[in-house]
Length: 290
Image 1 (cartoon, rainbow, N blue to C red):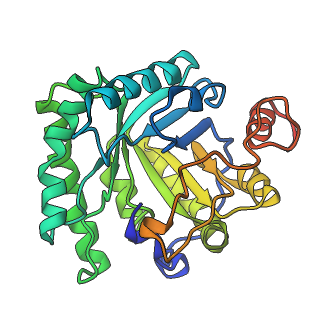
Image 2 (cartoon, rainbow, N blue to C red):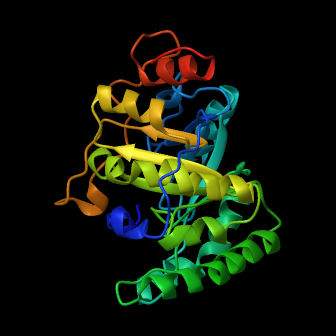
């Protein structure tokens, strides 16, 4: 979902110690691009989980039947105790015409979620960093707080609100994207394949999480291309507040890496199916093993 994911975390962590924080994940943060059929979501949403929906790279341009379908999806998720977040692209640093178009559409997207779909419980702002290949880390860090302040102003002007989640794909150099968030906002600390995550896990689960804790910022960890054993290791080892691990794999030959978030993991299961992802997190939250 975001191009910053490919950063080398070993370099990004320069200047940080490897101290480890210890906290169990609170719940799941589902990136659920599962389509507009409400029954697909039935029985799949743990109570208290955040669930990101993405009707049409946002909520604009939906037909009458799609609007009906997505309202049913939202109702289904909420009936299970889930909290619905609407996907909104923010266009990185708006350096190209396409990026500028996505940034300029933010207000309309917020309005469409509010009025067309009847409201959601917050927003998942993708392409969140002030990011461009031509910019160095200092420029990205310097540009991001102002961008996020402008987006917050758009949210306020739209008369909407709820939980705000910023997805830059990584924490930024020296955790600067974490520092760009306000208290009670959420930031995706990392979105990547398991093989990339493990290279920076000690930094992410230590100093990055400690920084977020000090600012009262909540963190998400989104990991793909993971086996069942790797999923279990991730849930046991992460200190992120919200987590989601999937078996779906990244395919560089497909747009956006393919349908990574379009299906539940093969090991998703339920709270009672031993070895499944839902069982694993539920067990850890209640002091058990995984």
